[in-house]
Length: 336
Ligand SMILES: [Mn+2]
Image (cartoon, rainbow, N blue to C red):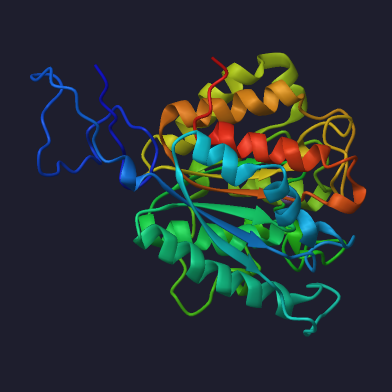
């Protein structure tokens, strides 16, 4: 007996009934034994690349989308049964205004505005948006769209860094260190306000996982805001399974679903060398997979970013391949 039920909103296989829209010919599997496949047509993933590296100090992460695509992401997702729509890449302006506290802000803001519209449209179509970075500043645009569309979401932010600076607290002015703060309404607002009336994400549903290089000012701001943080030492002690159970409760309960923002620098540099801001002693690859597999099993994932893959710094696309596999696992690829 095979029944495939699909959440229209998340485009993921769904065992619940909340989001299920019965269509003509539908028969309740609990009462009827007839073989029926329901609506695999609606499992559409929109892939959008963002060739952005103006939010970081090192160049080259703009080639991340190509690296992840060459690693076979579309083919892998299609093999899983998804229909993949490749929306191409967003390319930043060649030049733009800058200032010491917000480096290359004009290019960052412009890209985020365009990404906002792309992701919002994807959600309106009932598709599942996957955003490939690019540096992490682009999460401001993608999350702004998801938050505006759903109203109430949770965020799971997997990263070696807090990304919770603003123009006042940042020591570098690099805007890839600011998006988490921005989407929660703690600035800089230019990253998330495109005239759409931004819907800020409630910090009560925000989780940081894998942090091990958080600035002093940033730490104070995160504590004051009340972000739930599972730094690397807590993952050592509790184990990733328990950390994810707690993270899912914070981000998933009382929200429409979860946005996953995954920075590959969360993973230990031996396994993910192709990224600009490596920090020693990070997540093992299995801890990273367990995290995304847990999110997939919850069926609460609404959208995701996979960011900071820098092919110039990589070894034979090792990090690009890992990023591609992590996206597939987040969308439900199972080990067995
Ligand atoms: Mn980051």
